[in-house]
Image (cartoon, rainbow, N blue to C red; front, side):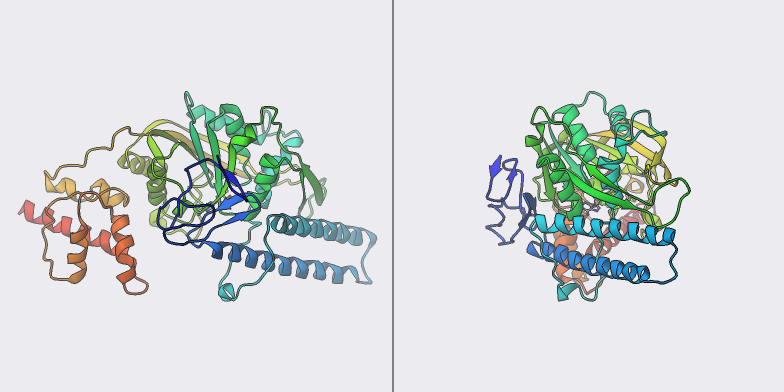
Amino acid sequence: MTENNAFIFPQGMLICPVCASDIEGMHCPKCHSEFFALGNIPCVFTAGIQQKKLWQHQMAMMEAQGGEALANLEYALQGYDLSDLTRARLEQAFESMEQSLDVILAQFSGAGLVAQLDPMYDQTTVDNPTEYYHHILRDWAWDNEPSKYFETHANDANLKRVMNVWADPAPGKMLVLGAGAGRLSWDLHEKLEPEFTIASDINPFLLTCAQDLIKERKAITLPELYTYPQIGYPFSKSWTMQPPEDAGNLRERWFALGSDVWNMPLRENSVDTIVTSWLLDVTGGDVKDLIGVITYLLKPGGRWINTGPLLYSRNMSFDKKYSAEEIFDFAQMAGFDLERQEVDEVEHMVSPLNARYHYEQILSFCAQKSLTPKPLPKPGSTSDWLTPPWLVMHHLPVPNIDFQCERGHEFIAKVLELVDGEKSIYLMAQLLQPDMPEGVSAKDAVTALFGQILEQMARAASN
Ligand SMILES: C[S@@+](CC[C@H](N)C(=O)[O-])C[C@H]1O[C@@H](n2cnc3c(N)ncnc32)[C@H](O)[C@@H]1O
């Protein structure tokens, strides 16, 4: 394990997400990117220290918005026409909101962040880090009360779903992408005892809560508050979440990592298992590209275990709201063999304080990355070439074949010069993007160019 002033992490795993060089401490000696620690959690983003400034800006926004909400409640409490019951409800809400704001800000400041607005984000809408607040309670609090929906409890059901599709688990070095508040990563870690588990996420609040509970063994108290009345349910409750049992000190091999799935600071072919739980549909990116990331990080023969719904966000364009069959097809093109799959329909986010809950369909599967890369299709019948895997899956290498077309246009010449049988559309696009006009995606342009060339070649062959 690498021991730094700030954090301990499995040796040799972290690389610079900008230039892929080894990093030294929190610094890249090659491209001079600077990273930082959130408490004891390494945070390795392409934005470097700017990511910390963004989180500090978000913290300042939360502080201001929370303060405003509390001031509004305080004002309402000054009303002369409040009944005793109304006053009691408002007082309870005030106490709960105040405690919640205090805990959130304490989590941030305990990890070394300082609320500070950054003019860089003045004109932008920044995410609220408490978006997944209830996930922390689902992971670590609600199981303390019996549930009428689960045989034991919700987290146990999640774990069982994963184990049902993962025959003969040999987790080795395990990476959980978008691990959230960390419960599934911990349950798998405790059950399977991998060499190590890395629980990565982009959300500072979830990261610090997971770290405090699992690694630092600190209890966290978080209130839960509903602003709509429900008959027979209290408005609010304060939950004290205890660290999980860990008689065997397994937490020493569990590590939180602040990172972005789209620019992971980990080596190619470096992990044996990747778990994605309730992630595919929420990253805002293209699932095909996420499969590219997973393929890159997994060792040959490694396993990808997924569980979660396909409830893509409203903002995701319809062409990217892929079905389960499309996802399996992409995985197969990327060199995965689907081993097991299961579809369940389950109650989701069932709080003991809430009469309402979600009911969701969940797709779970386990797929193995091939031991050897699949051979590239040979140019034969040109009709096969209209949508070859490398045109659909942008991380696959573009084959070194004779692409027949006029090379008059500078962009066409530049793209075709890059064809070497190794570079993918994704990589070519990264190299070309700096020279593209503003607002034009190099990836879209390169994909369209190859598509047109193949179409022309197919047409010429059929004449
Ligand atoms: C729906 S939650 C699921 C959390 C957890 N895996 C679970 O099963 O409860 C999605 C998680 O993905 C994380 N996430 C979303 N986009 C991400 C990104 N680009 N990089 C890293 N994590 C991301 C969020 O912060 C959040 O914790």
